Image (cartoon, rainbow, N blue to C red; front, side, top):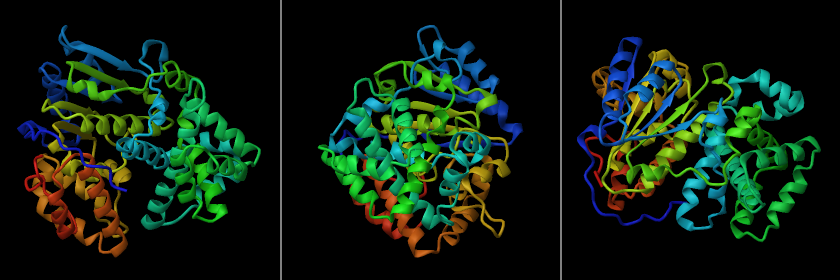
Length: 418
């Protein structure tokens, strides 16, 4: 369902808001220089650091008048807490897209990268359910969407409890799975007094029982970044959800510092952080630019809808700057087809980001992205996602026909600016 489009004052994006991606180690210095310039500017900055060099720039170049807000999952005692559960107390229709998006982000998490943790934590039986759900993009999209219905319902249910935290939801779900009480939980949620929870479970249970139980296990796997005690503390010490929208009002520098030794375990967390920040910034529009740097897009987990976000994020005055060590690493996360061509998500990211490589490949990739999505189903999925993002970004609705006609790539230069 598309969220309501909110009328906002028309603001043209700053010219420097064209998304950028720098590819190759030879581009690393240029990325760090852009980060330094942004931090020294009057604009707020978010930086997700997976390497020490970018973290050093954030700490050393920040002006005294710019407040530094640190998120450090590996050192919760030095960090702001990242507890998003209070968001799910909101029954406002306008927030439904954000809450659904966060749940789908977790269902989309790269838990498959961490087999050893999954085997230790879930056992072989549950793993068979998790890893045998669907083959191909059509089935995967179905499972992410329906798993998102369940997870949003669970979060809304736990949010009604005293002092709700992600850990409380995670532990509650695991206790259900260990005791094989999946049907009982679905009955509890399905009979909730909260109409939104009942609606979500009704949608979820349109799938057969076996698939539903498998998706419940997959939801637990998506939350497996809460397995380590440090991450449990990091997401539990505050009752207040983060509000990245305030970067539009204040001159802040927000840093998420990820421990290299545990990157695989917290891919889902870093992806959730990125998606929440982008969605909250999109919901607050006052014309002020906020820069968003990710120092290695291939190490932070698959960002749900990133391939489509880069097509319109400029309209929201978000200056997105990404770094990838190589094309091969980028394709590992965002796709490569069996016939050795860029997957459609990789194509979209490259063709809509400003970079020497993407500019030279732009025309070729535009055609390639259309060729790789000839399936009628996937075309409809892509159009649906574009329309959802357009609606949430308060982009002019009369541009919807342009999306339908395009049947593919939206060029950043033809995208409506407000």
